Image (cartoon, rainbow, N blue to C red; front, top):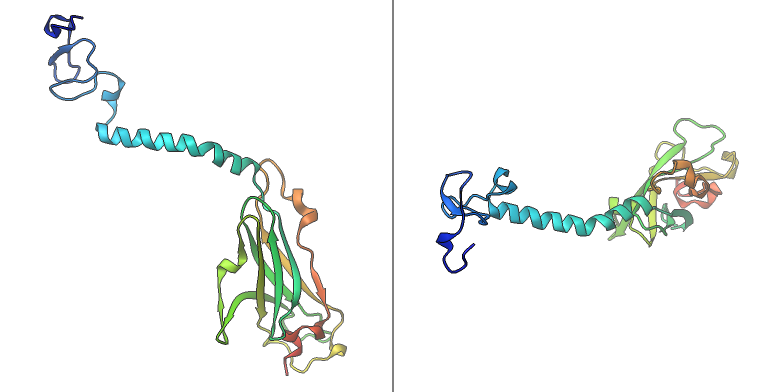
Amino acid sequence: MDALFPERCERKMCATCGALMPSPAAKCTVCSTFQDWRRYLPFDATVLALLTALVSVIATVAPSFVGWFEGGYSDLTVDYDRDDQSGGIILTAFNAGSIPAHIKKVTLTIPLKNPQGQTSFDGHAVHRSDQKEKEDEDDWFLPPNTHKLITITFDLTTIPPNLSKDDFLDSCTIHFETDEFYPRGTRPSWRQGKRPPDAKIPCDGLSVVRGRH
C-alpha cells in the first residue's frame, strides 16, 4: 500500500454496493457497510456498540452471580420470643446466610379437650401503630445477615371463649415453615436438622388465647 498515494494501492469492491475501496478498508465509504462478519448483523453500529457494552457488563457481573448461585445459601432460625400481652406473640428471626430467606407460614395449634371445630390457626405479621394493625409481607422476608422481631396475631374467633387450664390437653404449639436457598447440588435434607423447631407454650400463657372472654 502507498501511504502517500492511497489511490495507487490495491482496491476491492464493496460486498454490498460494489463501490471500489482500498483493500484494507473495513467499512465502505459509500454505503457504510462493514466488509467483515459484521455486515451480516441486522443492526447498525450504534446498536452493535450497545450490545458490546451489554456483553461487557454481563462478563463483569457473571462471576459474582455464579458464585451467588452455586455457593450462597440461607441460614434462617425462628424462635418464639415472648407474648406481647395484647393478643399477639413476638418472634425473633435471624438469617445468618448469604442469600435471602422467607418465613412462609406460622401456625398456632390449640389442643382442646373438646374441640368444636378448627384448632390450628395461621398467623399474620402486623405493624402496630395508632392502634391499627396492618399486615406487611416484607416482615416475612429476611435479607442476608438480618435480625428481626416480628409480631404475629391469630384470629381465634372460632374457638370458645373463657377457656381455662382444664380445657387443654397439652401446651399450645407454634409451628414455623420457611423458604430457604440451599447450596447447588444438595438435597433439601441438607439442612433438615436446622429447621426451626416447634415452640411449646402453655396455652393460658398466651394472651391471644387467655384474652377470649
